Image (cartoon, rainbow, N blue to C red; front, side, top):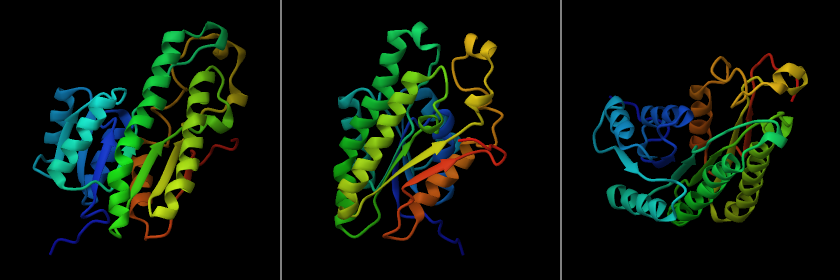
Length: 254
């Protein structure tokens, strides 16, 4: 007899599904028994993921740009038409660029604001109604944001990314108070990848990295993040893993 997973019966929509973190979340959800709508901009990569995850009607690719309200609305409509309801939303869409602030490129700033913040606003607003409907019927309803630990450690060279991430954290906290009494849980998962700003040398500050160091070699992996997302969504009714900070075990500063 097949033992049902902790997310069996859930319908999850994952924005940024083909990204570094989004792929791991989709994989974790399928293993946990959920049906998923994978949302991304690249139809070919979505189709490849669909096949890698086993295909079938329980996995639905949806091509959409999170910065387009019309695309997001279309993804919501398609998800509900296909599965009948949605009770779990994960927004992992995001871009990051860094430089000394005085050398920052306004176009890069605009892209981070558009994708990381405006896109998240589109997605969370569009799916708030179906999530609240699920909660009204007595079922689970979860909204999950992927944040950044740099809002607390003030990672140098990422001032604008940090500012946008702080706005996302504040949005999660506010929506938690707005939607919690209505039965919806709002979570923010903040991974840290081992960057210690107190150990960054002047030479490194003068170099041109485009993202925090050591991300790929960090013990905080996409699979770790996905496991925490699945844990948050599978908690018993009434318990909310509101904010989860993920750090490497040997990291001593925060």
